[in-house]
Image (cartoon, rainbow, N blue to C red; front, side):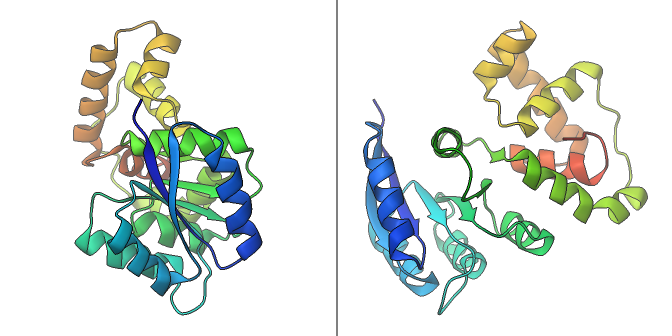
Amino acid sequence: MEVIKILIADDHPVVREGLFSMLSREPDFDVVGEAKDGVDAVNKIKELSPDVVLMDLRMPEMDGVEAMRQIKAVMPHVKFIILTTFSDDEYIFSGIEAGARAYLLKDAPREELFKAIRAVYRGESLIQPVVASKLLDRFTELSRRAPSGEELSGRELEILQLMAKGAANKEISAQLSISQSTVKTHISSIFQKLGVNDRTEAVTQALKRGIIRL
């Protein structure tokens, strides 16, 4: 069993303690450290090299977005999940732009958080529907002007819609009754047609262009 090394960055001690207690019960999670602000997060991430970081957005000294940008510049392998109380459009947009692979609100069910950690660790992404709808609102004006790109097939649209809901290749394979290799082929085609390199970019572009709705 692979163990996922996790770092928690949040300026509220009670939140950090609650997350530590909850995550430590999962056999494949190892909480290797905690950070109380953005500067502390950058230093701890460099020191402990976690696989996944749970990052709050509003923190003293340095906010979560700037901390992610600094780490991504020197440690691109570290994956970030934004875990915040803020669902404002600008926060969401900035967080995704800075490289977050998932964006969850703190009232999300624990199972959704666990799913996000495991998905992000595997190189996938997870955006809550409420957050995805905010992204769509943020891009409404741009989507009217954005080029549609090469048209996606019906099957590719189905897969893209499932990707937007955080489904892994195995789950997509099961739901659509196709092999995982076929899923991978379709995803490669989606990336090429949308001009993107990963799932988060694909979902963001699809929402931006109005190709999918959540």
